[in-house]
Image 1 (cartoon, protein in one colour):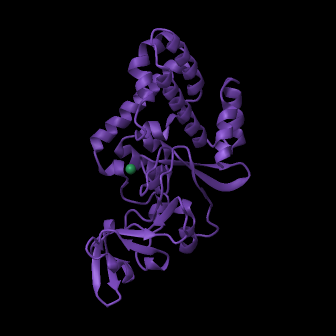
Image 2: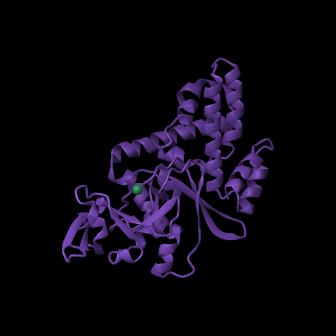
Length: 328
Ligand SMILES: [Zn+2]
């Protein structure tokens, strides 16, 4: 929804502005009277100062501080085509609840600005996912990976964008969400197109092979592919969009089978150091935690019941449920 909630002028009404790009004249920060988007010069703002003069600044030099004093996130205006966005004010660790969002009671700009969830922009490499709870109209947003101060909080408007190539992602966005922009301007879509597409395809293939081996409980294949497939999958960087986005929402049962087989492998020919094994096991567990959040585990009784009946009793349902509920 972010891209549709734009304010091109008078943004001082709701925000304090700091110009971080002024190295020589920081005192100008106290002199700003109005700040307007320069339509004729995309990406630049025009600042009217107390002495009547006007200065032009690139968007990248402006910091708009939301006066709501939220310690974790703030809403900032961005020039078109990005629209408003939500940004981290401090470090947010993977799995943490970032905020509780409300559905707007009306669609006035004022209301939309107040609701964090209305300003979250789409990214094909999102760092956040949300879920609702049963009998609760709020929406809970969780960090899928560590998020650093100043980083934008993003979600995938369409989950399948995470494992698709650039052209397909835009198609999905237009068809499956009310995405109105001409193109996706997320980091993935504006940089390294060929590399990004390959990364997603390769990771997705890796995940599919891993899931195939694990879900069929083919121990011979597992042992053979441990070093070439399973371990590399678990050890992917947290910034890998497919791993982070999981994406593995359809890889149900992954964790239980995988953890069992990992234990067996550990005792056999691939002697793993305990800390290495524990790290990999935790990574697999975290993947499933994110998957459950993505599926709306805590909220949707239909899905929850299905999962409970589907997975072996030994699956760590309570563990996951407790972890998610504690955060909420
Ligand atoms: Zn994108």
